Length: 436
Image 1 (spheres, rainbow, N blue to C red):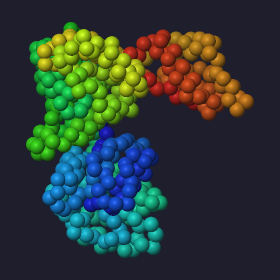
Image 2 (tube, rainbow, N blue to C red; image 1 turned 90 degrees about the vertical axis):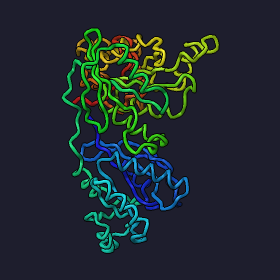
Image 3 (cartoon, rainbow, N blue to C red; image 1 turned 30 degrees about the horizontal axis):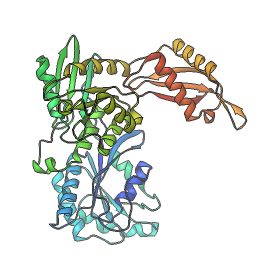
Image 4 (tube, helix red, strand yellow; image 1 turned 180 degrees about the vertical axis):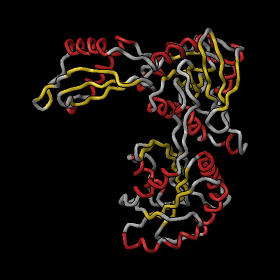
């Protein structure tokens, strides 16, 4: 299921990052009382009224020709272009400025739903002074306070009203949907072309639900696949080519619609911090994950063996210890044949369901081997377990007191489940519930 995308847009120093942090429940964006602190779009997941959506915090849009200001403007324009709903934020203590009017002109051109938020209305008595903001032309202004969290519920109620109905095309459970994500120039497009050209069994191009994306369907050895295209923006030319951060938003869209995600790493340049951030989105979304090291043909095996590179990956991607690693070259098609079999295994594991009686045998054996320790004078009792969902596989253990389930013991149970049932390539969730 695709998630709606909401962008917070406005001139500098109106409190966008403060509101962003409140909505996602974390201090993700840098908050500092001076203009220009947020340089890039920041992405996170938020939820309101049981609806999950992607939230983008943008740099302030400024009028000027300086290189930094132009880049910030480009970033904001991309966020506006990709968002389904835009929160236009202004500073309620300063009134309407020329910069606000410039931002408004930009938003008029977007033809997107815009919800106007008047921030820094810390005192309820100031709400009567917000009526001048009707002149911006976006309907009712919503008074909010980032400092105190006031008014955010009403604001989000209005935002959610504008969410489109998003879903993947009617999903066939027999088809494995997979996408490729990674920072620019790691070879995503080359790998897509290599997979399709090698198999030479493309049946059709199916228009995807993501704007500007074409999903490529093919079949190999009786298994059907759909590659979700994330390669390249088809608008604005150089703006997209030179703005590296757009890849994150494309990745989020592709991840939402995938069963399996291929996280590409460039063997030449090695592991970068952005690789870990992008992979983290797929992990948080609960998708099956394969780490693909591309351009392996450029590496001298004497200088850097696969084992050495794999050890480096495991060191930097400890949260992906379940993900298999595939080394290949999209350009020369070296080892390209090793990829689809791994996708098959991960796709199968991501949808695997374990019978309750078999699962409980494994859990009870684990308890016998390593009984839970005592916490606060109480001992954890695990009564039984059951699998409640797939994609990713999720389990509930019913216990006498969920607060007694230490994360280390939950990790121990996860390891025992993996040892017994595999689950290579997929995260698994374990939830503790009190038995009623």
